[in-house]
Every structure is written in structure tokens, then in C-alpha cells.
Length: 430
Image (cartoon, rainbow, N blue to C red):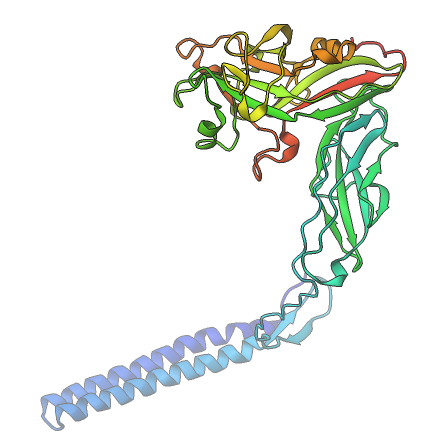
């Protein structure tokens, strides 16, 4: 059995009664002095001032002696302590005085880090990776250590956070180049895989890695290629402003100036969106169109995209001039609200639940454009029910061409995506 020895126990216990005895002695001295002074005062042997002074001096002496003794005992027993591990030797140590706190000196060998690069939305994506481009890095500090030595391209698998690590390094690019084609991504096998994040990092001459803004995408199935065509024009036409563009009214209230559905609040009536893409580039020889879809990104509302329908326009329009009654200043629609034919498609199922993007099937329209390029005039998206009274919740606002910086970047602009194959199409998903 282990524990303190008898003499250690005595040393520990001795101060306790001494402190009590010291307090009793001090109290006795002070009390006796007070009683004596009170008796003398009744006999008028001393003046009141001398009596009070004597009481104060005696009391201070008594209490001062008590605290002096208690302090000495405390210092003696706290400056040395014993450390006795179980079944081990007793080690006597002395506690050093604490080191005064000093604020550490701030060492900043680097100036504020310049911003990383924001890659452009990939326009060509194959089954083995994306063709990436980005603007040139700008060293805004003037410090040569922040000059670009090379660009590093990273690919991040779905579910991995870029904040944990930049991902898998798939290539390095000299500092005077701003493009890279990924050809080594694992093949996609199903409808919900093949989702990757690309990140462009700047490796500086000082050795630092400055990570850029990540961009997400899903690769097509093996044997397929996707081409993304950004809209060159997109506008809102409103029955409440039949002879004037709706954009000036929307710009006063919203960052995005595209709207669909009934709008009573702004007095725009029924609103529709029209999109133009310019002449489509011909597909490679032997290529076959698999599917095409229009992608739009909503900013607010638009909670029921399944109540919207996409149509192919029969007349081209001029973006800044288009209204409910006119395709341009010199050309009126054959019927107010736009010239369009049969529906080309509706919203497609989303592979990313919760995303703000909606994709609408445009395959039928694009097939016709590829057969006859002269028939290409753009697309129109409208709500199935255009009534403030019966369908007020069908209203929605969407990102315009060029985005709405900084909330909505340019890659959230409307775009048309074509998927084609040059080999026999793979079997459909079960």
C-alpha cells in the first residue's frame, strides 16, 4: 500500500492548526485592546482621538501578524511539492515562476495573395474529360515571387471537398498557356456517375499554390461528346408592355432581367423568354445527334418548371428590340407574343436535386436546324397557364446572358447543349 510517509503527513497537517491558532491569538490581542481602550475611555483617562488611534494600531498589528505568519507558511509549503507516482520514487521539484506573456511578433513573408483564376465554362466535354480554358493569371501584388511559374490542373471526384485538398493533379501547363484537354477521366457507367470538379491552380515562382474557382460538370457516356453553345441573345417579352422591351422594368427591381409567367406586381402581364444562338456549327462528318437541351438558371421563383414548355421560333429576333408585338424594330410578329410552332420539349429530370438549373428538351428543334440551317431562329419558353388569377406561382426569374456578377457568374447564362456520337449509341439505361 502506498501513500505519504508520517513526516510528510505531519508537514501537511501542521499549518492547519497554526493558522487557526494565529487567528485566535490575533483576535484575542485585538479584543483585549478594544476592551482596555473602552474601559479607559469610560474613565476619561485618554481622549477619544488617542483611544481610537490605539485601537487601530493594535488591530493592525494583530491582523498583520496573522497574515504574515499565514503567508510564510503558504510560501514554504507551496514552493516545494512532492510528486510520488504509484510504486515509484518521490521526486521533489520546484515550481518555476510563470513566464510573462509576450505578444508573438507577426511574421508575414508574403503580401496579400492575388486572386486565383476562374475557368471558363467548358464548351466541349468528351467521355474522357473536359477541354478547359481560363483567363491569364494576374499578379496584382507587384511581388515577383507571386509571378506564375506554371498552371496546375486538378480533377476532383464527386463527393470530395476542394477545401480539403485540390484533388488529383492531372496536368501542368506553362505559364504562357491557358488551355488544357483532359483525356484521362474514368469512364462513366451510369446516369449518376461521371461527375467531376475541375480546379486550376497557379504555382507561383515563390512556390505557393493559389487555387482558383472550381467548376462542376458531368461527363457524357462513352462514345459521346457534348458541345455547349452559349446564347448570344436572350430577352423577356411582356404583354403588359406590348410595344416596349421589358428589360428596363426588370432591371429596376432584379439583378436578372429574364422573366417567365404572369407578373401583376410590375405590371408586365404575361411574360415569356426568347433565346437566340446564331448559326450552329456543323457536327463532324458521320456524327449523329443524341439529344439537345436548353439550360437556364433561376434566381427566384420558377419553382414549377414542369409547367413550362419550350418552342422553336419561326422568326429571328433582335435582343434589345424584341417586344410582345415585334421581333425587331422593322419586323412585327405574325401574332403577339412570338411566332412559334409545335412544342419541342419540356423540362428534363434533374441529376442534381436542389440545383437552380432547369434543362428543357430541345432535341426536336435542333434536329430540324441541322437538316435545314435556314430554319434556325431561336427558342421560346412560356408557362402553360398564363393567368395572374389561376397561376400566380408559375412566375420565375432567370439569369441573363453574361450573368449577373457577382451573384451569378457568366457560366450561369442560358446555353444550348448538344450531345452527339460518332459510334453506335450505347444501350439505354434500364
